[in-house]
Length: 384
Ligand code: ADP
Ligand code: MG
Image (cartoon, rainbow, N blue to C red; front, side):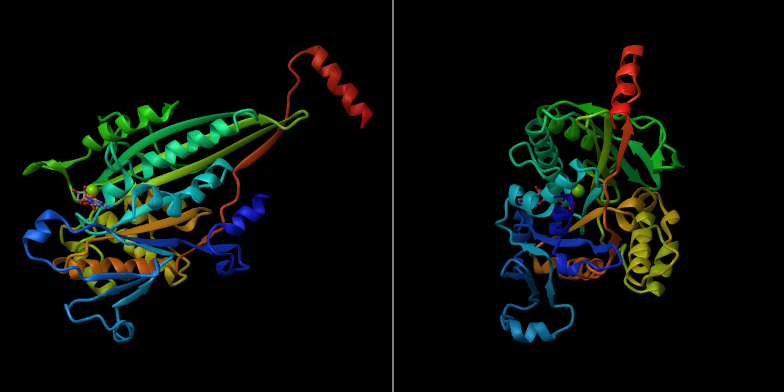
Protein backbone atom coordinates (compact mmCIF):
# COMPACT_ATOMS: atom_id res chain seq x y z
CA UNK A 1 0.00 0.00 0.00
CA UNK A 2 2.88 2.34 0.85
CA UNK A 3 4.39 1.93 -2.56
CA UNK A 4 1.10 2.65 -4.21
CA UNK A 5 0.66 5.82 -2.19
CA UNK A 6 4.19 6.88 -3.01
CA UNK A 7 3.41 6.49 -6.67
CA UNK A 8 0.37 8.63 -6.27
CA UNK A 9 2.35 11.49 -4.89
CA UNK A 10 2.83 13.66 -7.94
CA UNK A 11 2.06 12.07 -11.24
CA UNK A 12 3.77 8.73 -11.55
CA UNK A 13 4.70 9.41 -15.16
CA UNK A 14 7.11 12.02 -13.83
CA UNK A 15 8.95 9.41 -11.80
CA UNK A 16 12.26 8.30 -13.12
CA UNK A 17 13.88 4.94 -12.71
CA UNK A 18 16.79 6.69 -10.96
CA UNK A 19 14.70 6.87 -7.76
CA UNK A 20 14.24 10.58 -8.14
CA UNK A 21 11.13 12.66 -8.26
CA UNK A 22 10.55 16.26 -9.15
CA UNK A 23 9.27 18.82 -6.71
CA UNK A 24 5.67 19.95 -7.13
CA UNK A 25 5.22 23.61 -7.97
CA UNK A 26 2.04 25.61 -7.39
CA UNK A 27 1.21 29.26 -7.93
CA UNK A 28 -1.28 31.22 -5.85
CA UNK A 29 -2.67 34.53 -7.04
CA UNK A 30 -3.95 36.77 -4.26
CA UNK A 31 -6.88 39.20 -4.59
CA UNK A 32 -6.15 42.81 -5.55
CA UNK A 33 -5.38 44.84 -2.42
CA UNK A 34 -7.02 48.10 -1.41
CA UNK A 35 -3.90 50.16 -2.03
CA UNK A 36 -3.37 48.58 -5.41
CA UNK A 37 -6.95 49.43 -6.39
CA UNK A 38 -6.51 53.01 -5.20
CA UNK A 39 -3.35 53.31 -7.27
CA UNK A 40 -5.49 52.42 -10.29
CA UNK A 41 -3.83 49.11 -11.04
CA UNK A 42 -5.13 46.54 -13.49
CA UNK A 43 -4.98 42.77 -13.18
CA UNK A 44 -2.18 41.35 -15.32
CA UNK A 45 -2.58 37.65 -14.51
CA UNK A 46 -5.03 35.24 -16.14
CA UNK A 47 -5.45 31.66 -14.98
CA UNK A 48 -7.01 29.14 -17.33
CA UNK A 49 -8.02 25.53 -16.52
CA UNK A 50 -6.48 25.71 -13.07
CA UNK A 51 -3.02 25.08 -14.49
CA UNK A 52 -2.13 27.54 -17.25
CA UNK A 53 -1.13 31.02 -16.27
CA UNK A 54 -0.75 34.02 -18.58
CA UNK A 55 0.91 37.33 -17.85
CA UNK A 56 -0.85 40.10 -19.73
CA UNK A 57 0.98 43.36 -19.44
CA UNK A 58 -1.41 45.47 -21.47
CA UNK A 59 -5.18 45.70 -21.32
CA UNK A 60 -5.65 44.47 -24.90
CA UNK A 61 -3.57 41.33 -24.40
CA UNK A 62 -6.26 38.70 -24.47
CA UNK A 63 -4.91 36.68 -27.33
CA UNK A 64 -3.57 33.63 -25.44
CA UNK A 65 -2.14 32.05 -28.56
CA UNK A 66 -0.02 35.10 -29.10
CA UNK A 67 1.03 35.17 -25.43
CA UNK A 68 2.00 31.52 -25.64
CA UNK A 69 4.61 32.47 -28.20
CA UNK A 70 6.04 35.32 -26.11
CA UNK A 71 8.84 34.33 -23.77
CA UNK A 72 8.05 34.55 -20.09
CA UNK A 73 4.33 35.10 -20.62
CA UNK A 74 2.86 31.63 -20.44
CA UNK A 75 3.51 29.11 -17.65
CA UNK A 76 2.09 25.76 -16.60
CA UNK A 77 2.21 24.49 -13.03
CA UNK A 78 0.90 21.52 -11.07
CA UNK A 79 -1.92 23.86 -10.18
CA UNK A 80 -2.42 27.60 -10.50
CA UNK A 81 -4.83 28.95 -7.90
CA UNK A 82 -7.02 31.92 -8.88
CA UNK A 83 -7.70 34.62 -6.28
CA UNK A 84 -10.98 32.95 -5.28
CA UNK A 85 -9.23 29.84 -3.93
CA UNK A 86 -9.65 29.41 -0.19
CA UNK A 87 -7.10 28.24 2.38
CA UNK A 88 -8.54 24.72 2.66
CA UNK A 89 -8.36 24.17 -1.09
CA UNK A 90 -4.76 25.35 -1.14
CA UNK A 91 -3.94 23.04 1.77
CA UNK A 92 -5.61 19.96 0.36
CA UNK A 93 -4.10 20.33 -3.11
CA UNK A 94 -0.56 21.20 -2.06
CA UNK A 95 0.13 19.74 1.38
CA UNK A 96 -2.36 17.01 2.41
CA UNK A 97 -0.36 14.27 0.62
CA UNK A 98 2.87 15.48 2.16
CA UNK A 99 1.29 15.24 5.63
CA UNK A 100 0.11 11.68 4.90
CA UNK A 101 3.70 10.84 3.95
CA UNK A 102 5.03 12.32 7.18
CA UNK A 103 2.72 10.02 9.15
CA UNK A 104 4.30 7.14 7.29
CA UNK A 105 7.77 8.32 8.24
CA UNK A 106 8.69 10.22 5.08
CA UNK A 107 10.09 13.73 5.31
CA UNK A 108 8.25 16.53 3.58
CA UNK A 109 8.63 20.23 3.06
CA UNK A 110 6.48 23.01 1.71
CA UNK A 111 7.80 26.46 1.06
CA UNK A 112 6.20 29.73 0.09
CA UNK A 113 8.12 31.99 -2.11
CA UNK A 114 7.46 35.41 -3.67
CA UNK A 115 7.85 39.18 -3.32
CA UNK A 116 6.93 41.03 -0.13
CA UNK A 117 3.15 41.47 0.02
CA UNK A 118 2.46 38.62 -2.41
CA UNK A 119 0.67 36.47 0.21
CA UNK A 120 3.31 34.12 1.66
CA UNK A 121 2.47 34.63 5.33
CA UNK A 122 -1.24 34.57 4.57
CA UNK A 123 -0.78 31.21 2.83
CA UNK A 124 1.45 29.71 5.52
CA UNK A 125 0.08 31.13 8.77
CA UNK A 126 -3.18 32.82 7.73
CA UNK A 127 -5.55 34.46 10.20
CA UNK A 128 -7.68 33.17 13.08
CA UNK A 129 -10.74 33.13 10.76
CA UNK A 130 -8.81 31.69 7.83
CA UNK A 131 -5.91 29.61 9.12
CA UNK A 132 -3.21 28.74 6.61
CA UNK A 133 -1.17 25.70 5.66
CA UNK A 134 0.82 25.51 8.92
CA UNK A 135 -2.29 25.33 11.08
CA UNK A 136 -4.31 23.16 8.68
CA UNK A 137 -1.43 20.70 8.42
CA UNK A 138 -1.26 20.28 12.18
CA UNK A 139 -5.04 19.98 12.41
CA UNK A 140 -5.00 17.30 9.73
CA UNK A 141 -2.17 15.49 11.52
CA UNK A 142 -4.16 15.32 14.75
CA UNK A 143 -7.29 14.13 12.92
CA UNK A 144 -5.34 11.37 11.19
CA UNK A 145 -3.57 10.37 14.40
CA UNK A 146 -6.90 10.13 16.25
CA UNK A 147 -8.24 7.86 13.51
CA UNK A 148 -5.26 5.56 13.97
CA UNK A 149 -4.86 5.85 17.71
CA UNK A 150 -5.66 2.19 18.33
CA UNK A 151 -2.43 1.04 16.76
CA UNK A 152 0.48 2.55 18.66
CA UNK A 153 1.57 5.90 20.02
CA UNK A 154 2.22 9.13 18.21
CA UNK A 155 4.11 12.15 19.54
CA UNK A 156 4.07 15.51 17.76
CA UNK A 157 6.73 18.12 18.43
CA UNK A 158 6.97 21.62 16.99
CA UNK A 159 9.82 24.03 16.59
CA UNK A 160 9.60 27.43 14.94
CA UNK A 161 12.71 29.27 13.90
CA UNK A 162 13.72 32.42 12.11
CA UNK A 163 16.69 33.07 9.87
CA UNK A 164 17.37 36.79 9.72
CA UNK A 165 20.59 38.35 8.55
CA UNK A 166 22.36 34.96 8.84
CA UNK A 167 21.28 34.61 12.46
CA UNK A 168 19.08 31.72 13.55
CA UNK A 169 16.59 32.37 16.35
CA UNK A 170 14.05 30.34 18.28
CA UNK A 171 10.64 31.94 17.70
CA UNK A 172 8.98 29.91 20.46
CA UNK A 173 11.54 30.92 23.04
CA UNK A 174 13.34 34.08 21.97
CA UNK A 175 16.78 34.57 23.37
CA UNK A 176 20.30 34.10 22.23
CA UNK A 177 20.90 33.11 18.60
CA UNK A 178 21.11 29.38 17.93
CA UNK A 179 24.19 27.61 16.63
CA UNK A 180 23.82 25.12 13.77
CA UNK A 181 25.51 21.76 14.21
CA UNK A 182 25.85 18.78 11.98
CA UNK A 183 24.95 15.39 13.40
CA UNK A 184 24.05 12.07 11.82
CA UNK A 185 20.50 13.19 11.13
CA UNK A 186 21.72 16.31 9.35
CA UNK A 187 21.87 19.93 10.43
CA UNK A 188 20.34 20.70 13.81
CA UNK A 189 20.00 23.94 15.75
CA UNK A 190 21.50 23.34 19.18
CA UNK A 191 19.20 24.18 22.11
CA UNK A 192 16.09 24.66 19.99
CA UNK A 193 12.76 24.37 21.87
CA UNK A 194 10.81 21.28 20.91
CA UNK A 195 7.23 22.04 21.90
CA UNK A 196 5.08 18.98 22.53
CA UNK A 197 1.69 19.61 20.92
CA UNK A 198 -1.44 17.83 22.13
CA UNK A 199 -4.20 19.65 20.27
CA UNK A 200 -4.85 22.03 17.40
CA UNK A 201 -6.37 24.75 19.55
CA UNK A 202 -3.13 25.70 21.23
CA UNK A 203 -1.17 25.65 17.99
CA UNK A 204 -2.65 28.70 16.25
CA UNK A 205 -2.04 30.86 19.33
CA UNK A 206 1.45 29.47 19.66
CA UNK A 207 2.33 30.15 16.04
CA UNK A 208 0.87 33.64 16.10
CA UNK A 209 2.92 34.46 19.16
CA UNK A 210 5.95 33.00 17.41
CA UNK A 211 5.24 35.11 14.36
CA UNK A 212 5.15 38.22 16.55
CA UNK A 213 8.69 37.36 17.62
CA UNK A 214 9.90 37.67 14.03
CA UNK A 215 12.33 40.49 13.41
CA UNK A 216 10.87 43.85 12.39
CA UNK A 217 12.63 46.84 10.90
CA UNK A 218 13.00 49.68 13.47
CA UNK A 219 11.08 52.03 11.18
CA UNK A 220 8.15 49.63 10.72
CA UNK A 221 7.64 47.96 14.06
CA UNK A 222 4.31 46.45 13.09
CA UNK A 223 5.54 44.72 9.98
CA UNK A 224 7.67 41.63 9.84
CA UNK A 225 10.90 42.35 8.05
CA UNK A 226 10.79 41.33 4.43
CA UNK A 227 14.19 39.74 5.02
CA UNK A 228 13.03 37.30 7.67
CA UNK A 229 12.59 33.60 6.87
CA UNK A 230 10.39 31.50 9.18
CA UNK A 231 10.59 27.71 9.37
CA UNK A 232 8.10 25.55 11.25
CA UNK A 233 9.32 22.02 11.80
CA UNK A 234 6.88 19.35 12.90
CA UNK A 235 8.27 16.01 13.98
CA UNK A 236 5.90 13.05 14.19
CA UNK A 237 7.19 10.03 16.06
CA UNK A 238 5.36 6.75 16.07
CA UNK A 239 5.95 3.68 18.13
CA UNK A 240 4.04 0.42 18.10
CA UNK A 241 4.33 -3.31 18.67
CA UNK A 242 3.84 -5.11 15.41
CA UNK A 243 1.71 -7.93 16.78
CA UNK A 244 4.61 -10.07 17.91
CA UNK A 245 7.80 -9.15 19.69
CA UNK A 246 8.97 -6.34 17.46
CA UNK A 247 8.78 -2.64 18.14
CA UNK A 248 8.30 -0.36 15.16
CA UNK A 249 9.79 3.12 15.42
CA UNK A 250 8.98 5.65 12.77
CA UNK A 251 9.72 9.34 12.52
CA UNK A 252 8.64 11.84 9.87
CA UNK A 253 9.65 15.47 9.67
CA UNK A 254 7.55 18.19 8.07
CA UNK A 255 9.11 21.59 7.33
CA UNK A 256 6.85 24.52 6.47
CA UNK A 257 8.75 27.56 5.30
CA UNK A 258 7.70 31.19 4.89
CA UNK A 259 10.60 32.66 2.93
CA UNK A 260 11.80 36.26 2.93
CA UNK A 261 10.60 38.55 0.14
CA UNK A 262 12.23 37.56 -3.12
CA UNK A 263 12.34 41.07 -4.65
CA UNK A 264 15.72 42.00 -6.10
CA UNK A 265 17.39 39.05 -4.44
CA UNK A 266 17.02 36.45 -7.13
CA UNK A 267 18.89 36.98 -10.32
CA UNK A 268 18.87 34.28 -12.94
CA UNK A 269 22.36 34.48 -14.33
CA UNK A 270 25.52 33.92 -12.36
CA UNK A 271 27.03 37.29 -13.29
CA UNK A 272 24.16 39.28 -11.85
CA UNK A 273 24.21 36.96 -8.86
CA UNK A 274 27.85 37.79 -8.19
CA UNK A 275 27.38 41.51 -8.59
CA UNK A 276 24.56 41.37 -6.05
CA UNK A 277 26.59 39.42 -3.58
CA UNK A 278 28.61 42.42 -2.47
CA UNK A 279 25.51 44.50 -1.99
CA UNK A 280 23.50 44.31 1.19
CA UNK A 281 21.14 41.68 -0.08
CA UNK A 282 19.60 38.66 1.55
CA UNK A 283 22.44 36.19 1.52
CA UNK A 284 20.23 33.23 2.31
CA UNK A 285 17.98 33.85 -0.69
CA UNK A 286 20.97 34.33 -2.96
CA UNK A 287 22.39 31.06 -1.71
CA UNK A 288 19.01 29.43 -2.29
CA UNK A 289 18.99 30.56 -5.92
CA UNK A 290 22.56 29.29 -6.38
CA UNK A 291 21.53 25.91 -4.96
CA UNK A 292 18.48 25.77 -7.22
CA UNK A 293 20.66 26.59 -10.22
CA UNK A 294 23.19 23.91 -9.27
CA UNK A 295 20.44 21.33 -8.67
CA UNK A 296 18.72 22.12 -11.96
CA UNK A 297 22.02 21.90 -13.83
CA UNK A 298 22.76 18.57 -12.14
CA UNK A 299 26.01 19.83 -10.57
CA UNK A 300 27.86 17.52 -8.24
CA UNK A 301 28.62 20.20 -5.70
CA UNK A 302 25.58 22.03 -4.32
CA UNK A 303 26.64 25.08 -2.26
CA UNK A 304 24.40 24.46 0.77
CA UNK A 305 27.04 25.76 3.15
CA UNK A 306 26.82 29.30 1.77
CA UNK A 307 23.98 30.30 4.07
CA UNK A 308 22.03 29.32 7.16
CA UNK A 309 18.81 28.89 5.19
CA UNK A 310 20.32 26.49 2.66
CA UNK A 311 21.99 24.50 5.45
CA UNK A 312 18.60 24.14 7.13
CA UNK A 313 16.87 23.26 3.86
CA UNK A 314 19.49 20.82 2.62
CA UNK A 315 17.30 17.78 3.35
CA UNK A 316 14.32 19.42 1.72
CA UNK A 317 16.02 20.38 -1.51
CA UNK A 318 18.44 17.60 -2.27
CA UNK A 319 17.60 14.88 0.23
CA UNK A 320 14.95 12.20 0.28
CA UNK A 321 11.91 14.38 0.77
CA UNK A 322 8.53 15.19 -0.72
CA UNK A 323 8.98 18.83 -1.64
CA UNK A 324 6.33 21.37 -2.59
CA UNK A 325 6.82 24.97 -3.59
CA UNK A 326 4.04 27.54 -3.56
CA UNK A 327 4.85 30.72 -5.46
CA UNK A 328 2.75 33.69 -4.34
CA UNK A 329 1.94 36.53 -6.72
CA UNK A 330 0.01 39.79 -6.79
CA UNK A 331 -2.44 40.42 -9.65
CA UNK A 332 -1.45 44.07 -10.08
CA UNK A 333 0.34 45.31 -13.18
CA UNK A 334 2.38 47.50 -10.80
CA UNK A 335 4.09 44.28 -9.66
CA UNK A 336 4.54 42.90 -13.18
CA UNK A 337 8.34 42.65 -12.92
CA UNK A 338 8.29 40.91 -9.53
CA UNK A 339 5.59 38.54 -10.67
CA UNK A 340 7.47 37.63 -13.83
CA UNK A 341 10.60 37.01 -11.77
CA UNK A 342 8.72 34.81 -9.27
CA UNK A 343 7.13 32.81 -12.09
CA UNK A 344 10.47 32.40 -13.78
CA UNK A 345 11.92 30.84 -10.61
CA UNK A 346 8.87 28.71 -10.04
CA UNK A 347 9.20 27.44 -13.61
CA UNK A 348 12.84 26.61 -12.98
CA UNK A 349 12.06 24.84 -9.72
CA UNK A 350 9.93 22.36 -11.69
CA UNK A 351 13.18 20.91 -12.96
CA UNK A 352 14.61 20.10 -9.54
CA UNK A 353 14.76 16.39 -8.85
CA UNK A 354 14.89 15.08 -5.32
CA UNK A 355 15.33 11.54 -4.11
CA UNK A 356 12.06 9.71 -3.55
CA UNK A 357 11.35 9.94 0.14
CA UNK A 358 11.59 6.63 1.96
CA UNK A 359 10.19 5.90 5.38
CA UNK A 360 12.48 6.54 8.34
CA UNK A 361 11.52 3.33 10.05
CA UNK A 362 13.27 1.01 12.41
CA UNK A 363 12.05 -2.36 13.56
CA UNK A 364 13.60 -3.64 16.73
CA UNK A 365 13.26 -6.91 18.51
CA UNK A 366 11.69 -6.31 21.85
CA UNK A 367 14.06 -6.78 24.76
CA UNK A 368 12.49 -9.07 27.36
CA UNK A 369 11.88 -7.22 30.62
CA UNK A 370 11.80 -10.00 33.16
CA UNK A 371 12.94 -13.55 33.56
CA UNK A 372 9.50 -14.93 32.85
CA UNK A 373 9.41 -12.86 29.65
CA UNK A 374 12.78 -14.30 28.77
CA UNK A 375 11.48 -17.77 29.33
CA UNK A 376 8.44 -17.05 27.13
CA UNK A 377 10.70 -15.66 24.43
CA UNK A 378 12.86 -18.77 24.56
CA UNK A 379 9.79 -20.95 24.24
CA UNK A 380 8.56 -18.93 21.27
CA UNK A 381 11.93 -19.18 19.59
CA UNK A 382 12.06 -22.93 20.17
CA UNK A 383 8.66 -23.30 18.53
CA UNK A 384 9.94 -21.72 15.32
P1 ADP B 1 3.91 38.39 2.37
O1 ADP B 1 4.00 37.51 3.58
O2 ADP B 1 4.20 37.65 1.11
O3 ADP B 1 4.74 39.62 2.49
P2 ADP B 1 1.18 38.70 3.22
O4 ADP B 1 0.81 37.28 3.38
O5 ADP B 1 1.47 39.46 4.46
O6 ADP B 1 2.39 38.88 2.21
O7 ADP B 1 0.00 39.40 2.38
C1 ADP B 1 -0.09 40.78 2.15
C2 ADP B 1 -1.52 41.24 2.39
O8 ADP B 1 -2.43 40.63 1.49
C3 ADP B 1 -2.01 40.91 3.77
O9 ADP B 1 -2.82 41.97 4.23
C4 ADP B 1 -2.85 39.66 3.57
O10 ADP B 1 -3.85 39.51 4.54
C5 ADP B 1 -3.42 39.88 2.18
N1 ADP B 1 -3.61 38.59 1.46
C6 ADP B 1 -2.63 37.84 0.95
N2 ADP B 1 -3.10 36.74 0.33
C7 ADP B 1 -4.44 36.81 0.46
C8 ADP B 1 -5.52 35.96 0.04
N3 ADP B 1 -5.31 34.83 -0.66
N4 ADP B 1 -6.77 36.36 0.33
C9 ADP B 1 -7.01 37.49 1.02
N5 ADP B 1 -6.04 38.32 1.45
C10 ADP B 1 -4.77 38.00 1.18
MG1 MG C 1 5.23 37.78 5.28
